[in-house]
Image 1 (tube, rainbow, N blue to C red):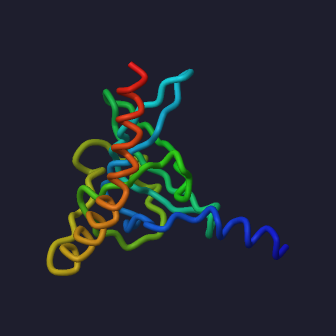
Image 2 (tube, rainbow, N blue to C red):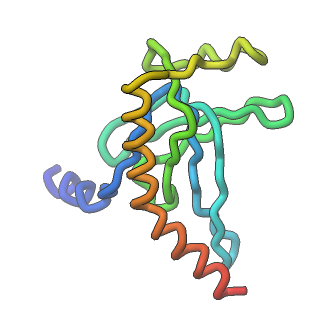
Image 3 (tube, rainbow, N blue to C red):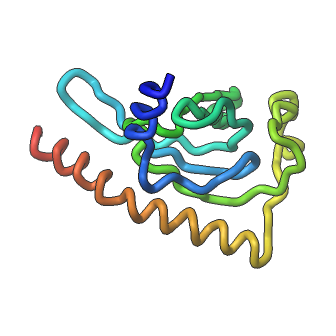
Length: 146
């Protein structure tokens, strides 16, 4: 069992993204199609976190052409290039599955404002800047392939 923990520690990211349930985020996700790589951005509301450690995942929900789309991302995955905080949200639950049943303005989450929100956004932007070099390397590699 100790061997598994040591392997998992090696796979952890150094610059972990700082966000929580209720936040609106942009997930920069690396897509591999054949021999080409590109970065796709999935922007939406974080509705839950599951598991812990290296196996931790988060679910992001967005509305696309009137249809709700959810995607589960592994937090420590090398394919998740960076997670950018767009708007911190104010919720009082750990999992906000109730948003699935809401439509339109009712599905909107209140924005967190004040000094605490500013600190969260600043911390998130610092983590995103740290992973910008990784994203630039992927884009340069894609350009060189063309």
